Amino acid sequence: MISPVAELRRFVHAALVEPVPRDHLESDAAFRRRRVVALATLLLGAGVLAWALRIEPGDPLFYVATLLLAGVWAAGAFASGRLHLGRAHTRAGSEPSRAVVQSLALGTLLLLLFLAGALVVARIPALREPVDGLLAHAAVGSLPIVAAITAVNGIAEELYFRGALYAGIGRRHAVLLTTLVYAAVTAAAGVPLLILAALLLGLITGLQRRVTGGVLGPIITHLTWSLGMLFLLPQALEIAR
Image 1 (cartoon, one colour):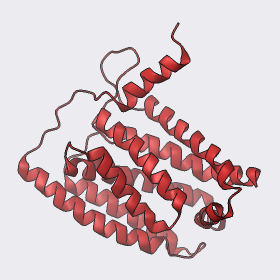
Image 2 (tube, one colour):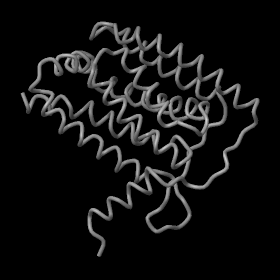
Image 3 (cartoon, one colour):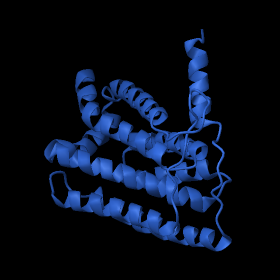
């Protein structure tokens, strides 16, 4: 019988360490084009994000701005070149399959980690106040609409950061650089804990991208975490108040 620790070690190795064999090579011209498009998209997206985060809670313009941001990330990702869904290792060791179950597990573990951290954040006003300000968009506006926009933006972010940008950087240091760029863009929100979240989420999804060779795993992990935080974080903060 395999111990829980050994099982967890095997899961982490399969999900975040050992790459699945594949051949995603592209020409030098395609690689250079991908880099140019990725850089232009990054500059435009950072500007739109900075604008969106400065819109007052309850203003319908916030919805327009965040959907526009998703459009920038997604359009830039698809314009940069071919994107792959990727494949993950299976528990049975057979042919690799789509990274669905692994990603749901990773997203859930990340969500539980942040909800536990919320119990500490709730007791520190300097950390809680910026988070409350960010959550005000969901509290004042329509929660179903905010959830839909959160999902759309999560998908678009992964298409760009773990799709176009990751491929544009190349094999060396792609996980590190995409994580740092993602955190730097997120810093526009002015919420320290959101930057920490971007670093952790960016690292996990970056490692997934390295292992699976595609964006499906990162998208599922991102959505599991972000939608879970949207619905559960306010309650966790209230309980710990």
